[in-house]
Length: 129
Image (cartoon, rainbow, N blue to C red):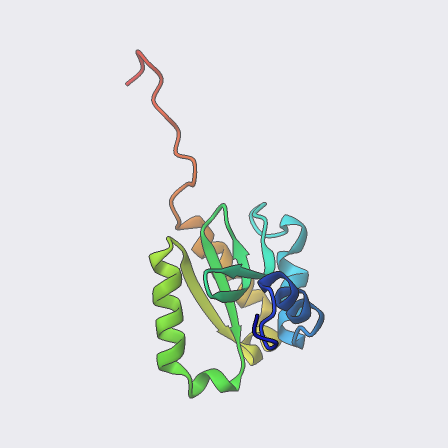
């Protein structure tokens, strides 16, 4: 095994322990089902990627990006395309936006969740239209 390889769970734990101030601020809003009663996980692996915040039930991924992402546009687009091919919606926020306008970020997340199809659509009962 490659000595540089780390299991995704070990790398996820490492990233959680080294969270940026923006990630910590957003986690304070997302944890304990504070937004729309939806559960989120931090630094969650999906395929070859570790995503900042993931709601598996809502199929929503929230990425908090630093300045390096301004030059990694093609890489981020390929990453988002892969995650979307897995059935997820990806929304991104810049670190400074999370820090400076957390209420607006939370509102955008609430809107994204409200505009997503229900993960468990109600079924018609026999004999009811």
